Length: 483
Image (cartoon, rainbow, N blue to C red):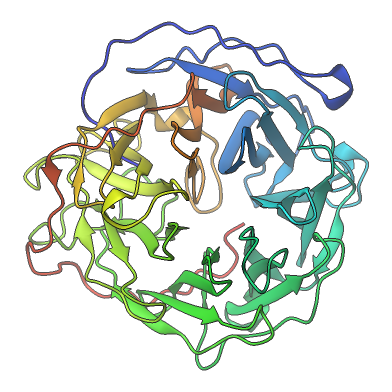
């Protein structure tokens, strides 16, 4: 996610429409928008003493037809998780939005868990059900849950328990290709923190109502942040961040009955960002209509000495091999800008040299900063030829002071990931945490979306294929629980 071409700031008035029975709110556009109009689509309504209010962090999104659904943490708790999981939904292609909060997870929603975390959204076209995967947290017990909506994301069920244990970084996806032999299968990925972040997969064939056995990919598979994607042929590819400081992937060719051994996508060269910000190299992944998988993460390999990160993009050349990462040309390698936490979206009706990509990200304009001086902003860039060349970058929000976002045991946090969804033939819709200055001890960090979405325009800024030798020492990662 990175932007840099200044557009005229348009004060927006966002209308969140919906039913009071599902907690719809009438909100105005976020005032912190930098260069585009933003519509605020949710805000934290809770007041429980465990959390930092008003905060909303770590959004995922998914679009199918004219419906877009996002899910995120609401009321961030410093020690892990949040007061509940919130959702925002548009049924008219992003024109108007409804929002609410999931029932039956935390005590705030009538459930039994103390906190919730790590929301991920999917749609199962065969069973016509929307799904939100999340974590339910009670001390060291952290379970993967699945909430279901049978009315297009307007109302949500109490959650189904998908997996139990000490789990983390879940992600959900469904096979929506009618010609696929596994049409209607849904897949959930997570890792087991009590087993050194060993990765597991589960499969559902009934719209997320029940889930099969927990299966591990072959060979060594410790890591986190896996984002499964389903190819048109029904095969599933799962890129993730391994604990050996690489991006790796594994796949299933039989509808989740078994999972093959992992392969390397790329090494990672990463610069730790300033200001004590919570930030990692978790991948963001999407797939196009031809089955090419796109994976992005933050990486400093194109800058000699690893002084700051760019966003890089790797594409699959087969289901088990990957091209070398290219640098997304947001700005010059000589710039002072630090880029991190990308969220990629791909138009699933396009492919190859015509693939339409929207990429959101966060950045510091000047990476030489401290917790008191770092300025956090969000950006956007797009491509219409599969990432061969890119548009100019656009600043979406900021600058924001780090003191405007909640603190955690691992640093100030707006999310370990974000997300962008591109509607077929239409605009890109990143849902973003955007903050304004707190009022006393009360934060003002809610979810916003660019009003009407963002065009996928492409441009002539060519992606860099070669650059400085990869910089920065290799890291041995042992993240443990990151919820």
